[in-house]
Length: 594
Ligand code: CA
Image 1 (cartoon, rainbow, N blue to C red):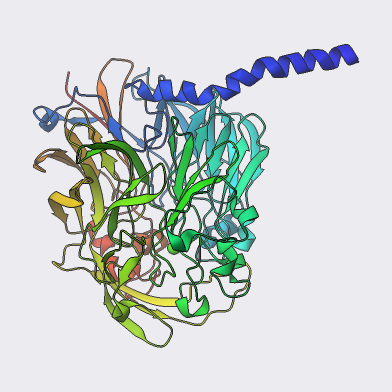
Image 2: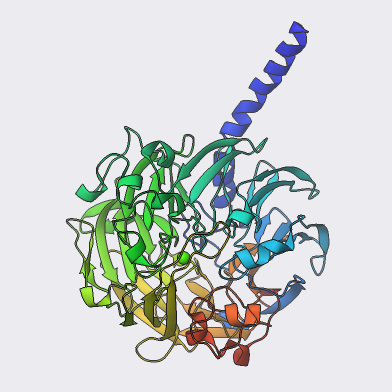
């Protein structure tokens, strides 16, 4: 018996280094330009590919090589992964996962996995039943399902290895965000900011699914995982239990701050970065105070979850400016200094360049026509608000820019170290907003506002912009009639790819913004283009089309445009999407002719 125990201990000890070094394995894989091994291609969330077979000269010859229908009609966000010779494609609810064999003509299905989920979860998702993609690590594919479950699959066979429920959808908790593997944990967030969910991020052991840590976005420091290592970059971020004391009573318990965005990791600093969403409810009068730590960028130790720093972008939010957008990591030359920077384009309309070692602001400038704040005070970190644009339940506040859906929502930007520019797909939408008194009821919507959105100045509803993060300046832009609601990809061939809600995939010169090529995919694009090298040695570009998401909720959920406040206000701005495109998830894969 004792002998057997020793053998088990010996085997566990031998397995441990494999787990600990797994992020090095992933870093190595992400440096292999042929593959796309994590949601944003690299831990830094750049969505930059070193591939350069496709160039500004030859991109005009790009043509569809093969297509794949996902069999699902709702909105398709995110991008597939390519691990070795296999492509992994995810879908909106019911969250199918397909493994496609890239070695065979037409990329036939190797395996398909469909989780068992109660369809009663469908109406619990505020803004379409989207999913933003998969994670890979340790020979496993990780999937977050809409019913708030994390699943580990054998990447070779699709066989389920473990599953862990992160939350109860009957209490308003869902998951739409993509997971991320760091060392021996898989990181997952939670959605439900419109259902009074108290947001959190969870790290589960990759081998067993066991919960290693969970960090809440509100509550006492012991829940938020703030300890002696925490650095507060600004005075109003200092103090004990701010996740309780910046709320009234026990409102923090249904305080939102959900975590449905993207995750980044700096292996050198050993810090995980992500940000939190709106405080609940949308009616600000019901929750006086700064409402920490909603609307906050967190830097955490991925092994323990302990916070290193936090920065709240929109204290006491009154506009649903979810702060969950991606954090792009790059070392930037600013003046004569090289700065370890984090770049973040917030729904509140400001593009931030932050010192990622300590959370201090370097640049914070509007990347669209912002009017709720005149700027961000770099000394205090606080927005300089226009009181006339602060919303309340005492009346309807009109002409606020940007709208709740932001100058940018889920659609992730891309950063090129070659041009030094960030390529940001944006919305150009403004709104009227009226707070409404709402009572919390478990599992029921806890919105508390009537919002009407409409096109912003100029009448176009989106643009792709190129942004200099060292100065906070727009370099060029391409206006779009509908929003540029899909993500961006930039390559070493100096080509930027992005999608539109009409379904165009466009290729643009990264330096000049000249449109070089476009292709009309079968449905509106809200997914993110990606690129890889196939077994034949050729560079491919792939994108999921399949309209939906918050901007496309009208067409996705079959809501008519008669009421401009429907779809949490989205129908006012996007009531005509059904004239431009139709539903249906299709992956289109492009290459140059032989
Ligand atoms: Ca929200």
